Structures are given as C-alpha cells and as structure tokens.
Length: 165
Image 1 (cartoon, rainbow, N blue to C red):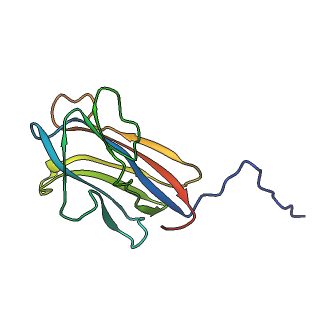
Image 2: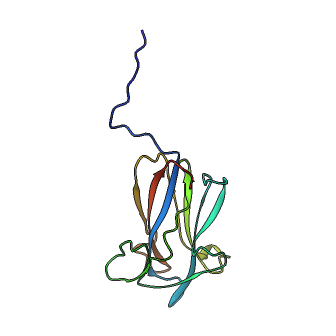
Image 3: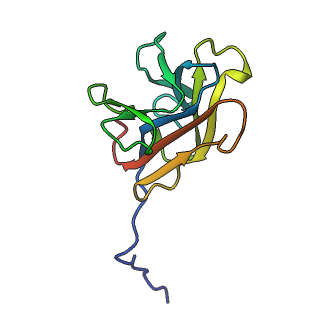
C-alpha cells in the first residue's frame, strides 16, 4: 500500500528566478597607479532573458566607465563599506539588479577600461546560484593578501524571486 508524503512546515521551495544585487565594490589597491577606470559585467549560461549573455551592470550606460581609487568603496544605496576606506554612496543610481534563472553558474567581472587583455580583469569570480530558497550574501576578494596587482572586493546579495524582473 502506498503512503502519501507530506512536506514539513520548514521546507521551502526554490524560487524559479534569482535577483543579483551588487551592494558595494571596495578597491583596496588599483591596477594602475592612482586610479582605475572600470566597469562591471555579470554573465552566465542561466541569464533570463536570453540565455548565454553578459550584462553590463555598472555604470549602466554602454561605453561609460567609472574612475575608482585605491582605498575607496563604491556603495549602492548606502550599503556598508569597510572601515578605513573612503566611501562613495550611489543613492541616486540605485543598485544594479540583473536577474538570472536559479540554475547554473554566473560570473561577476570587474574590468579595466580598454578590456582587451586578460590582465584587464581586476576581479573575475564565478559562483553557483541554485537552489535559491533564501537571501544569501557573498563577498569575493580573490587577491586579498597579494603584494602586487589589483585588490578588489565585491559584496553582493542573491535574492529568490518568483518573477524574472
């Protein structure tokens, strides 16, 4: 005789979409002396819509860049920055919130202005976004402790969403 299974009250179904929100970018050390001119892209095979594309998420206007300095932090909507750095709050710009399906991997890439050579990737991190059952905050700082080259940190939040936008 078959028995029916009942889901426990604590189980949560994964949302079909995920919203990726960039909270802040901390520049501990730039690649160029003085300042870097950067832009941020988020991409992956699971982007909605369409599949297999990369979104330019900050600054939003294509072709635009942002100049950043060592020991500074760009914060979207007044998200906290680490102590001891100059904070630039982008309250009017709003957070960058591209939306992805909650399966597969996505890649966050901070690039120098010309974006022609592999050394123009000042931060390049991939991570898995599924399954999405609750908000999750990530911090990536791949070159922490390095004595040379760029040292960037990005803080972002992944939020389950029932709608693609």
